Image 1 (cartoon, rainbow, N blue to C red):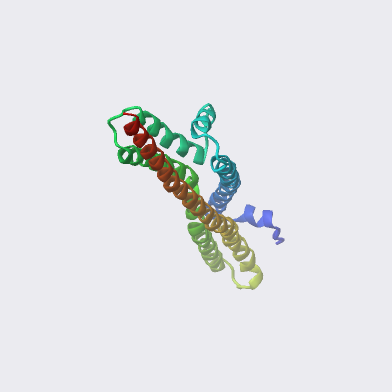
Image 2 (cartoon, rainbow, N blue to C red):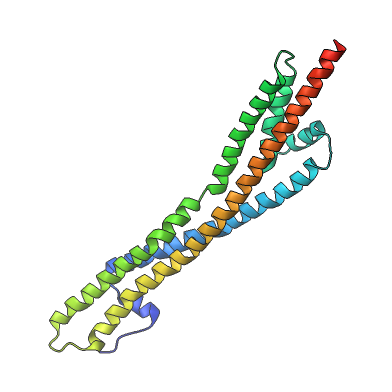
Length: 232
């Protein structure tokens, strides 16, 4: 009897459970690739926007003018949102003359930390899914392979003469599940490792900006406080 040994033929002749395993791995692979492309764009944009904002911030521009410019944006991204959170608290508290410069900078720091946490959470979104696909897909594929090979050997009990040609198609179709598991896992693992490093670098940049901006706000608050005392 002729057996179709093409990839599609082997998949079509596989048992229902093995086909379900292959379908699950195919869906996981498609979703993970979608997330890989999406996360690449998000991290790239966050890095480029951080570069542009830092250039503007450290160019000596007036912070109030920069704040008004950034605040008008509908959805300010990344470092801009952190800057808005800190400077907004600084302006609000500085209008209250009884608040000390240390309290002003501490409150601004806490506001920026909260905003940074939200940005980090957005950057890390989808990474857990990529880690899950990368760690579980080989085992899911191996399960389909073991099940398919087991059915192939069980089918030998129904034939009078066991030959390699009788069991080879079943083993081949079962091994496709392992190949699909690796196909889904390898890109997910590579992307997870790469994006985790990229996110960590962005987090370090955000944290450094928060510390430097807090020190700058504290110096400005102390300077204005000393000017007010001198004028009084």
